[in-house]
Length: 113
Image (cartoon, rainbow, N blue to C red; front, side, top):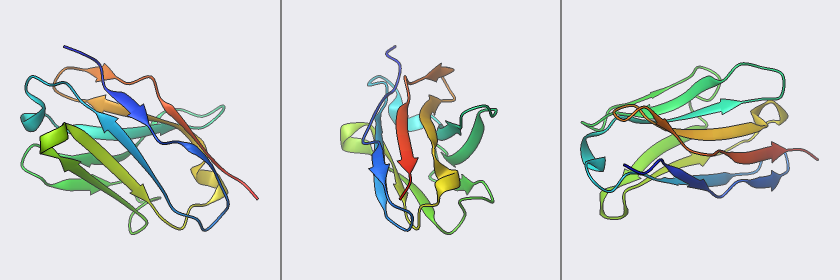
């Protein structure tokens, strides 16, 4: 199986919105729990959002109400929509396939004025 591939990171100002995407494994994507994790410089990697095989979603307290995770079954894509971004959201964001235990290479999100 192929590892997830992220895209869409970048530099934005505080308060802005940004979406990042992850293309998952083609074989059994539809039944995998998939998640977004992030790692800021000097800090441990932390869970941001998870979308489970049945569609249920979970979020960390730090992003609840600002971020939304969704998936497009036709394109095997998991999307993280981020709103009201804060400087503390700056990190490398990684996509994770919980079924296969595979990480993507990560995409940098920087929130700065």
